Length: 142
Image (cartoon, rainbow, N blue to C red; front, side, top):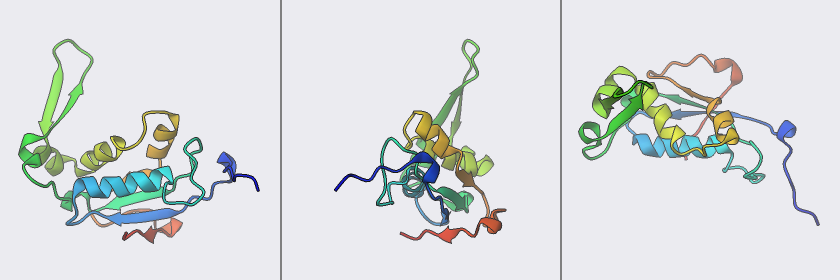
């Protein structure tokens, strides 16, 4: 009996919706990262991009536990000397909650071509409305 190896062109991708309201930001991001990589499938192989599409709704209602909202910062650099920008996570969650969720998921995905391809299948929305009803997404409640 030979070992099954998935082919990149023959991977069937499903659509999943994760509701982040009232849940921890990191736990929702971990679930999304697992689905994006395809680690929940029995045919998972680390060298093949076999993940699914993930829609995260209610990102604005995600919770940061402890003192993370006031003590955790997101840093970015503009490329110019001395231009390191920082923003606290409570401000980031107020202004761009989708960005905070994307950053959390990006930190849990490998930094290679498979990870970058997986992040293109992530959609985040601040509210409970999304524009992907035509794909018939399933709810992920595990």
